[in-house]
Image (cartoon, rainbow, N blue to C red; front, side, top):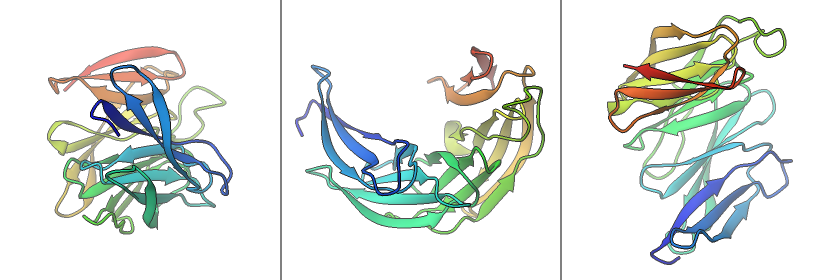
Amino acid sequence: MTTAERIAAVGTYSEAIDESVYTVGIDTETGAMRQLDAVAAGHDPTFVTFGPSGEYLYTAVREDDEGVIRSYAVDRDTRELTERDSARSGAAAPCYCSVDETGAFLLVAHYAGGAVSMLPLGSDGGIESPTEVIEHRGSSVDPERQTAPHPHSITLGPEARFAYVPDLGTDQVHVYAVECHEASLSHVDALDLAPGSGPRHLSFAPDGERAYLINELDSTVTVLRR
């Protein structure tokens, strides 16, 4: 890789035997892209994220009745992937995962499973079993998409003290207090949104005081303040 090249990872919908997680080099000066590696990560590894050091890649995989989180070591020179570890995610259909800035734990949202979970991580890329699995409850007005909870993402806020979970099925953003040393989550609040909005993903502004929320079902963006 050149000094102008950055690495990205790509997850896919795929069969279990297919190459399904890719690393890609992106030239930041020209915009050119090239494939670096590809691995068969399992059935539908739809979400991937790097740990804070860039040494490990984590992917959320739909397998059987309970999802799986897999970790891969990323070669510093070639960017090739080598599977390091795996663990059950705690519920069905994991669709999003976040790693804290120290690399100590991973948070997972499960769309079909209607739950969030927390898994401790090792400095060597190891993944422990979930220390928390918390199920959401409720529904909303859309008869096809909102008959049950559907946590669609889980995002750590500034200082990583709280995690924010947009739930497409209930039109809410749930707030969890994060206890790093105890590897625990505590539900502290839920923000009700417009019925039928279908909140999906949330991102904080650089100042940490505002967040922008994408609503899938009514195609809107909501600005939130802490």
